[in-house]
Length: 230
Length: 230
Image (cartoon, rainbow over all chains, first blue to last red):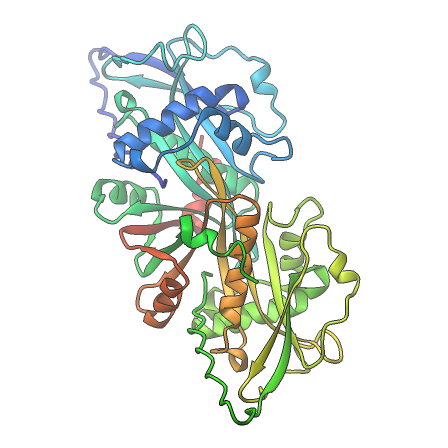
């Protein structure tokens, strides 16, 4: 399903000149997901379905995700691609995961005004200190008028306890940055027309809304009927 | 730009029992486009821009299309893919083009009630008898809820003198048939909300309209601004 709505990141309060405020340091990293991340990705997608009240449309399993997202022939950015955002109270060690030939992880230090209470920390931890915060799934699309590829963002999701802290913006920015790096012409996604907070957030990020266009979908039995057509 | 509006195909009139009506036989073929087809594809995309009154957004050249649509690493159906629809007054000879390992051309014989006057026959001919009628450009997309790829149809275009004869339906059906063959879950595209003829045509083909979703697009300077972001 399409992009969930990350709320706008709050503007950081100016620091008082006389005393340092109490803050919670957090180290974040955006990296390419691998086959090993499938169990976490599956749980994130399910939480997104719950958030969108669309669990009746959810039929993904860990094995179906593994087979379709991480096939042997698929190359990141040229096919379906997942960025994972992780957080840790300690700096990220430079590991073998950082030597991925396609993407150098983006690390960022953030100071939060309050510590995050994460009730699902054990479910989403990838190592002792590191926890999965959210993900973005995207893949190339194409504009014939520009004669250029772009990226289409299918999903953008941040776990509930990490929302309203700028993490959605970090994930979407990482996709935009990669598009610029590759010389691509556009980044596109969809939003529900009643989701005014998400729309405001996307417009603040520089996106235009294409209000006249409607999505057409051929699926299920109506699609299967074409299997025997000539 | 997105799918142009092929008008509904007319229902064929029943033949009278006593005498055969005058008809114009036409042989059609849908095949994978190749690098050699780029000049025709470029002209078709330009005609689509004129039809949509969007020539100010048109910047594709033959060389930019060739480089982005037919790169050495791109495999049909796993990346950007173009089906061309051709027509001929004579049956299509089985040629080397038919031995493409990815797709066996779809041929179909149609009887038209009137001959087609094609003022651009010379511009769009691919051999003595064969003329390009239209094209469809599509590529894989992905549904996380289904954990399945689908196809997204970026462009569907039929040259003016060939419209209202079922050719748009043939092209879109070929994409749907290929999706079923590959076990894909959906075929999607977009339509302008005021284009009621196109919407009726798509609904007749079995598509649903997703009326609540809006497209967001980050492009131009707003996108380039992310090039230096961290």
